[in-house]
Image 1 (cartoon, rainbow, N blue to C red):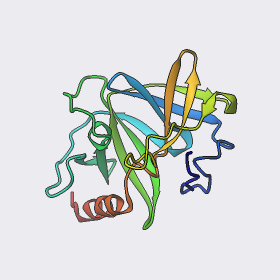
Image 2 (cartoon, rainbow, N blue to C red; image 1 turned 45 degrees about the horizontal axis):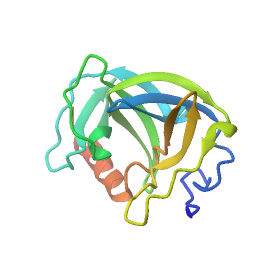
Image 3 (cartoon, one colour; image 1 turned 90 degrees about the vertical axis):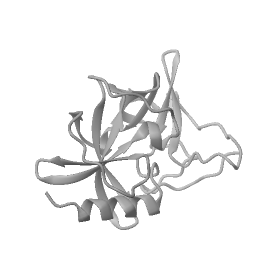
Length: 176
């Protein structure tokens, strides 16, 4: 049985009410994932990313986005998928996450952005239980769209509190 975990918006992962709405879909390793459109600030093409020493492998580095330093997380690496070369379709989704130290703007590197879907509550099901040893806190739910399954990600849960703290520090320590 899947436990009810509260996300940073006050909803519980076991309760699907309130999850219906617009989601930005993107691809990783040929599979479709999505995040709530209200969390997305913008989508930008791949640009020069400055590596930051002593950060986890999933932190690609930081970018200078109109004078603001933004940390960039490689979502493939964070979700423990194999790495791949960037392509002309690789892009950065700029999102605002709520962490324990307050809001943080960060970039999420994905293989490609697909579309915005309007997902109805009737299309949403809880994520299956994978056992106690598998962390699925970052999965809001699953949506059935046509014949496919779209994984609804909780962008606020993709990184742990410690990882968010590390990104906040790397953002603050970068000088342009």
